[in-house]
Image 1 (cartoon, helix red, strand yellow):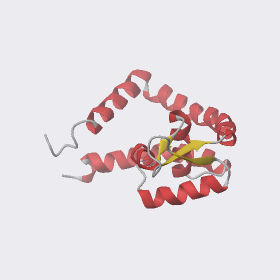
Image 2 (tube, one colour):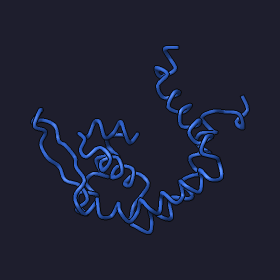
Image 3 (tube, helix red, strand yellow):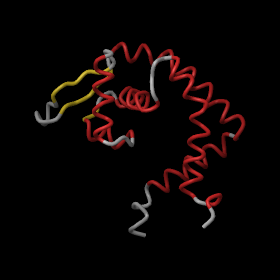
Length: 143
């Protein structure tokens, strides 16, 4: 199969194309893509244990550990012991993280709005649905 018709390479190219719009915004606010992804998901979910956070962010545990350490040292997330399992840590965004999010999110939303304007709302929704279907397809190996 030629690489210009390879799904995996096409997805990587699309991601890279999109991220060139977001990286400058994140850098202005002192975040890497991965750090922002962690904060964004924690803000959305309110709290998660590290395993669930790793799965939702698509960040491997060793990298996630470094990111958590960095964000905690910056006062952007806190660790609590799980009420249901004392062996697990629950990660939560701090008030400071929520305040920073109020500055970063409008900027990133403008980029999303521009993408939707160029690509079309219907195409955008269709693509998101197809990508979700791909992710939900039993890891492809079972089909």
